[in-house]
Image (tube, rainbow, N blue to C red; front, side, top):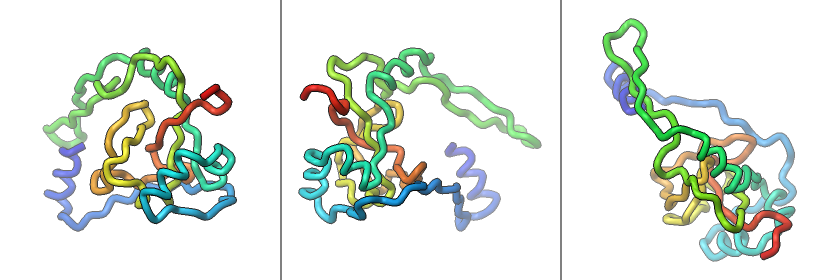
Length: 166
């Protein structure tokens, strides 16, 4: 990816903006709320029942154990080279399961709940988020991606599977 960015900057200049389509949610929100401080953020994540979260635009991605089972079926990451048309260079891309993608099933399964796009700037610096492949890492707004699909970010948090004993 860095090679593509470098080529664009070198050949088209630094002022190029790449815009991808955003996929807004199709249903209206029941509750238009975005916390303005970390305490309120944590209170919502820790206490709001699923129907309230859904009404605020949160989306369930999957369960951790389902994602982990998918990760187990993938080969480890490796670099492949793709020829660039009308050029002597190739583009290198990593494909397969990355080392940070978990492969050990959890004793107690967890839901992966995605944040609504409107919450991107409300996620506290350093908050441990969960990605679409079950990887967890500290969130940093400067490194984050506010791209949305169906109104949700591609990051979320984990909570006990809905309906399980806590």
